[in-house]
Length: 110
Length: 116
Image 1 (cartoon, rainbow over the protein chains, first blue to last red):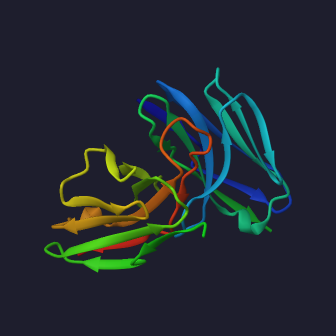
Image 2: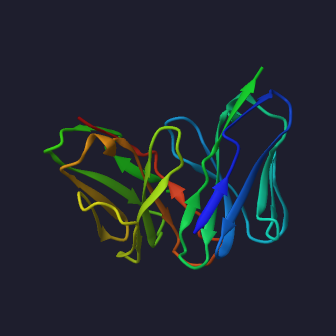
């Protein structure tokens, strides 16, 4: 089975940096995804990690450590529009299912 | 076209009604998915179709019946639903299932279902 944990809520200030952590346990890891979801809207893809290390995409970066079952999403130069839920999702190698974590609701204040 | 289109956006139905949710993509994706999302919860996988064949059914009650008429369309037929089935139903598609980094899911905006 799988277990994916994220903090429920986080707050940050406009212009700051925030790190959203995700820990997971899975019987067969085959990639970790981060999605952003604004209230009432579809999740949108942010990043994908399958090997250890840091993937950078503009203001967003994602890190993976497979040995620790750990990932984080780093958001720099926060903007008000970054207020959203951030979903960590793990693909299981054995079942090929993409399973989502509980999600982290980020609120950015002026 | 890089979108997944879902209709209707909102649906209100009684417990004895029969209705359908529709999903369409024209990205040439061969895998399509139904997820259910309750408020403030993550999406939960319901069904996966791969090359128009049902490959995963997450023990979903039979009052939900998926259908994949062709590679671009995915339907979810609803019958005799319960109030607790009220949720946002998300459709997604990907190039394929399987172990590939290219297998990124693209989601539709969802159909918000209310069962009275």
